[in-house]
Length: 126
Length: 108
Image 1 (cartoon, rainbow over the protein chains, first blue to last red):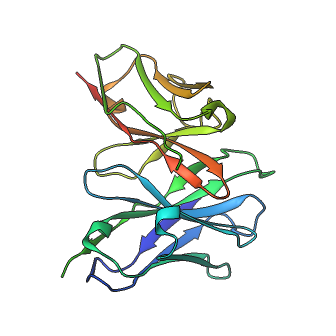
Image 2: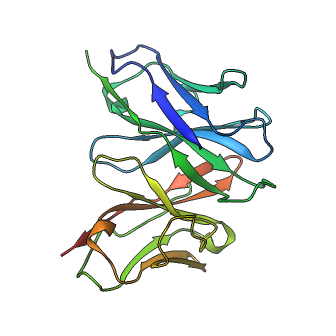
């Protein structure tokens, strides 16, 4: 059974660094074709992809945010961490982590976020 | 930057067919997926690789992708199908993943 769960602070102040953790189970991030990504959703707005990390430790970032984002993994603890520096009230959102798969020999959905966490709400305010 | 554009809203009567489009440059060269998000919930994958349904997704959900437009079709729309729908696609190693602007489906 695949599960993902986000954790992190509910609030942050402008200019602080935000650290979010995704703890997952039911699959291995070291399996070829496996990725975990972060997606956020500001209140009342659309989903916005932020970053991905894959089985080979390749990292991909949203162009407009790449100077502020770092994604990393701890494969032994089945965790993926996203840090965002210099947060602003515009970063207020629900942050989701989700599994993504590409070019994997394992059957099932591909080129899609197929399992999502429930999301963690982060409010940035002074 | 690459963009995926969807109509903001669609209204449909119960039992009718819902059609949602997702437009992007040469989109047929990409694999498009769709997620459904109900109010206050996490998104749920309903279509991947343009037209495939994950296990557990009803057959009334159908997808296609041709030219610059991908389409999600819901046949015999039910009240439980209300919510927001987003297309998304892996564009390139430089661009990463792009989500569509989202479409709110209302079942009248």
